Length: 434
Image 1 (tube, rainbow, N blue to C red):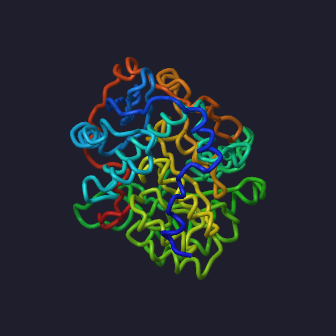
Image 2: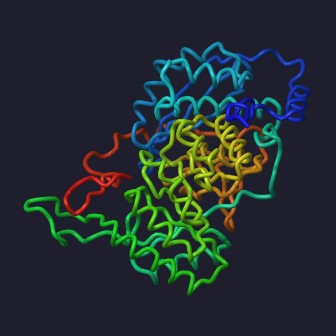
Image 3: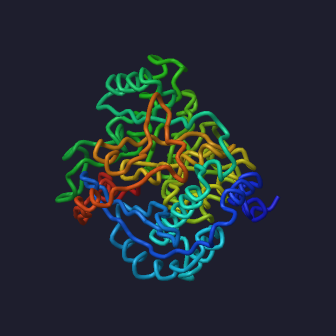
């Protein structure tokens, strides 16, 4: 079975949905894109959110999409306003696949993170428009519900094993069946305190990461959790790419006795060929894809069954159209989806992932992401999280809108400079890749 055969047309509306759409829109005038607006906002909390609003020739009909990028928001805005909006205006928003493909090659070079943000924002907005015009939620356009709910995993952290255990228990009491456990954030369990350890003279004196310490400590955390919590809860852990390849192999082997739901991002994307080696020696389920932007990264891992879950961010890899194609590939090879959210993500991307989740056979889990009350007020229709499940609504389209006046009250601010959580150091001062 050839990969291109699996991917070709996988995102097209299933036949029944296409018939329903045609019936509901029969006799309506042809649509065109009249205007493309970019709506940036910090949403009162320092977010770096960029939304695309595609306005059509039908009065009052528009769609919303997510083009957010926490590290390059201003570049995304400029790309859309100066380069893509002029290309999109006048096009037919009903021709989602054609517009996706033509946008993907419009700049000749493709699969960059900023390009994909713009493409994703457009794609989500077009599906939103199509659903609104037909009076159907997007998941119905994609084939209808394949399950009764979209399950989530929660994030539990703590300064020591007992606090991690307590926080996992809290989520279990709320109804979560899947909980990701960390101890001191990313790299926690492997951090040497500031000024400690053997360091170069006049070298970096902050907290540093030591992979041997990490590989020794984290399995002990999960042994503790299994003893105290049993097998009822499905446990996850995020390595966040901190390990070298051979230590990643060792870590995966050591985690096998604790029956993980998955271990996430055990390697940096530059070393993904090593997933094949890990699979040869352990059954620990592996998830990867948070940093992926190109099919040439995830297609081999899925088709060779080197990972168990693909962790792409929908707004970073091409939107709903690309996510459906990825999910179809996963289905063929027994891999499941676990679309990435993260604290910087936005409600439109969350709902785009939700609509895909509902309609695919290869769904595995969705990452949880809570938003403060102001966001729910600014963006009516923002999904609700209850009892370990994500709840959108049955409104046409994506089911979310934005109050532009409220968004404008919180303009984007440049992100703070200096070192960030992405620039962890080792004891010798060298960079540890995230």
